[in-house]
Picture (spheres, rainbow, N blue to C red):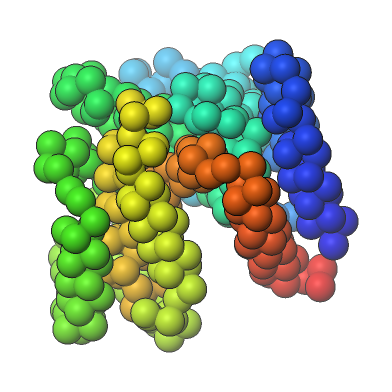
Length: 352
């Protein structure tokens, strides 16, 4: 319970710090990310940790990727293995490797928060509560790929197709789920409003039920590269909550509040429509694949990350009294999410 209490204390502290000078907020943000890097690098016994350490020990020299046919180990993406080989060239120590990769992800998180977030410390709290434990403490490859994509979404706003696709290609070398970033570039060209969003969400719910039996076959046929076919089998189907998944309605709530506050928020944030499209896209994926626990979670999480930019914007759109209530409600929800994820991991490693 200590990490949960620590997160609660940090959330309250963050709300206090955002009343201070911007330089103070930035210093606290950097210090927190450094602490998180240390925690990521020093974790012990967490799921997937051993796989990364073994892959690091098996990583060849960097030039072998050119001179030889290097086989991947532990995961299919050779780009992440290449990063391991670079770190190994500096210091052949798996703990040092975990520190380096954690630090790289936290640096990308810092760049994303300072580029798109109205209140970076609040955005960081959302990231910690919603994503940190699953990604940076376990699925390190997806963390790096997702944060790279999120940092590059400005290229969608600026309509720089080639540059954005190059970033997707780079992120793809670290995790193949990066391909999910491609449709957003073209979806962003479509202007949407509250009615079209609600209509699309309802249609997604209907299709998720009507096509439930067909989805597994489609994934089996087209997911060889993403390696997601196992996520439509056995326990991943049996444990699925379907449309009873509370995360669906949490995201819908955030999306609709953000949408109906468009007259207030859009004029203050040039990335408003882009963030909404990203989160809308994520929510549609979450709903459509709701009958497959891991598949819906791992695919929708990419642009669910936009939430860390949206919540601070929503907060800024309220008056002081409503903003306080909003922060309290968000804090309770984030602490619950953090506790849930932490408890789940502790159950997995047998410490509960």
